[in-house]
Image (cartoon, rainbow, N blue to C red):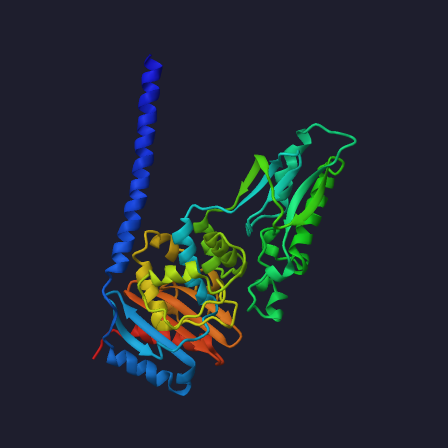
Length: 411
């Protein structure tokens, strides 16, 4: 009787904790929606001295640059071509990574599972884990040594293959698809498809590594790899083993700090539960509209920014970053950005000494494109700068940020 009483108390407390957790999560979401929907509209309250300095500096390349500086109160203190749509490069990830974080939550994982099918065969269900490597593949099948061996019966391990035409967004160039940064976006990957073999054919490479692992573990007499169409129905009865990726808030460091295109595209597809590479996507477009900022001139061709068909405005990006400060996952989001002179894609930028460690931002780079958008720490300033079709663009962006940092008086 006493044991039942304590069990009842324990289950009651567990239910209360679960309920409280759900209520807290719901409250955080509602609070976020209220804050974003009621945020004060941005207005132009130009800081003349700063605007004049930046206009003077950019005079010779004005048509190539957009600059928007926004303070915490919602005043645009600088606007140079802010509403002109430009190619953002990896600043596109500012938007897609926020979408993934909001939809999936910071603790979401990409799982690779070994499953038993009802006919006795096995199935590896992959999800595009960017860190999944050969050692994990071997670990996934390691326990199969404990299965009973049937000398006359080899069981298949099923892998679902996809067509090469479905490996990339259609707007990615042929040249980019041959590079590591343009690796095929598939569920079956070995170390983010970074090797030459993976770039040529990630599915074949996964199968080859699986067959190699079966031989290494003395399992090739028991099992063989069976490749089937991606639409092949799988009726599994149990999960044998699961290998989880790092949680999403860690993966976002790959997306934003390291600007990893493969990871950006994979987590975006998990957010949509759709691997079709179709753009523009209605669910994503509607989510952006719900963030209550100006994205009228935005064009979405991919999640990573590798497509040259993407277009954004610095006016819109700076507004969006202001709204992300009200996200329930704001800390996870901004902590995934690079720090100028310290970490990520901005670690080795030749920046003024007084700016090192003071800029928290997402950078982007393509041929003839350079973009940096983020926050000047300690100053309450949000900025977005995009330069298209100009040489020495990084140097000019650093100079502009230095001018912003060193201008303290508006008149």
